[in-house]
Amino acid sequence: MSIRTIIEINHDHLTPATCASLCSLVSQLGLSEITAELNRQGGAPINLSAGVRILAQRHHSTALKLEVQ
Image (cartoon, rainbow, N blue to C red):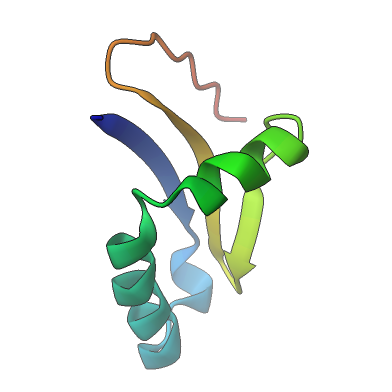
């Protein structure tokens, strides 16, 4: 299944450790645990580490409107 994931990175908090966390995250994006956690949160973002959040994850054919404030 092809999915799209929107990730927010706050560059003010970007460190070598955060970069390592991002590499780990990329290897886990297809796992159902992330989708399940987003569902448990009611679609609210998942805070992964300082300055890194998953905003949304959808099937590639599903439209998603993202509003940045």
